[in-house]
Amino acid sequence: MSHRIRRAISDDIPTIAEIGYEAFKVYGRPDIREHSQHIAESSWSFFYMMEDEVGPVAQAMVLPHTIQVGKCTILKADVGHVAVRPERQGEGLGSHLMEELMRLLPGEGFHCTRLGGLMKFYRRFGYEPFPRRYVQFEVQPLDAELRGVRWAEKLGLSPELQARVRPYDPHGDHAAVGELLSQYNAGRPGRLVESRGTPAPEGTAPDPLTLVYEVEGVIRGYLQGNLGPVHAGQPPTYQVIDFALDYGYPEAGEALLKTFLRQAATVAPTTVTCRLPYEERLFDLLNAATLQFDVLEMRGGFDGNMMQVLDLAGMLQAIAPELSARLQAAGCCPWEGTLGLRIPRHEATLNICADTVTAGPAVLPGSPVIEITHATVLKWVLGLCGAAEFPHLMEHLAGPQRIVLSILFPRLPAASGVWG
Ligand SMILES: CC(C)(COP(=O)(O)OP(=O)(O)OC[C@H]1O[C@@H](n2cnc3c(N)ncnc32)[C@H](O)[C@@H]1OP(=O)(O)O)[C@@H](O)C(=O)NCCC(=O)NCCS
Image (tube, rainbow, N blue to C red):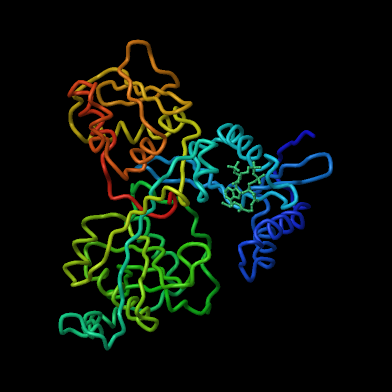
């Protein structure tokens, strides 16, 4: 029997809801029927359907995520809700769907793809384990003590600071917070580029978990909180899902986080998981305000986050203006020439000429070549790790070639979230 894959149409909504419900009900989520219906109604246009002569047998959702890399962007396909009708599982349909998706997504402009799942299965389609990053704050009940200091005191603020924190007004603060988020995240690699939409209607009730820090009528800090599961199937906990501050008002970070952590203390002991950027400047500022936290990088090897490159040359071309800007900012170009990059199933070349970097599709004969994994090149592109952290991959390169790579791919204060 032959199978074809196609984009979903709105007529597929009942089928998407039904396949989703039937495939995922085994995991015991109590509201799985409503959840599948909601996903089908709200996101049907992102689904791909695989069908045989009888009709759809399998489906997957592909969300397009534009990710910032300095002044450039790359496009990621976020794959989820992979499901095969239960009576047809184990026949190879899920594998066929994934193989077909990997074949067609590069043609739709995607540079890379991410998913979370059982690694044994998804490795077959080229995905590699990829980190996830969080910042976690431990919170104890406010009357508990740590080395003689009550948590209420540890998380307390002066009346002056406290008066500057208030709930975010989804109507009145929309534009100012949008501006603050853009300034705080300007050029930040790994940040999702998204439209913040239009402001909520006037009079919309504020969400008490989303806070702003305001000085003389100007918003200098923002914290978007949430109460929900960190990973699917986990009980809800307090989380910070977005954050920004104006470094001219460094106390904004302390004021917002302490206020939020005191709210979380109502369910203490608990751990508050935050999607903060991995930014030393922010970490030092929070430590100076007596806050302590763990910077957590999860490295799943069995079940977890995975990524792969879909179009290496296209991805490097997309970020070439940013790579050129890095070379220009370095003020020197220690080496000029073409450098080949090989990852499983793909190759590309970087042309480095004075202060300009361009990318091409094939390794040129005689060029030095670095052979790396999909995960490594993505860590470089997203600024999660610097090329210099992989000396074993560059042993065969000349010193100036290694320095050029270190200039092009440094570790940067990357955002966390959209890639893992
Ligand atoms: C996972 C799923 C999409 C695989 O589709 P399928 O048509 O059954 O898969 P295939 O016949 O191509 O391959 C079967 C492989 O999938 C593996 N598999 C089964 N359940 C899986 C799961 N939840 N996640 C990943 N792989 C799974 C099987 O172990 C089997 O591996 P094997 O070849 O080593 O024995 C399908 O079983 C399904 O819809 N499951 C319920 C929903 C789900 O868990 N989706 C994945 C979320 S990450």
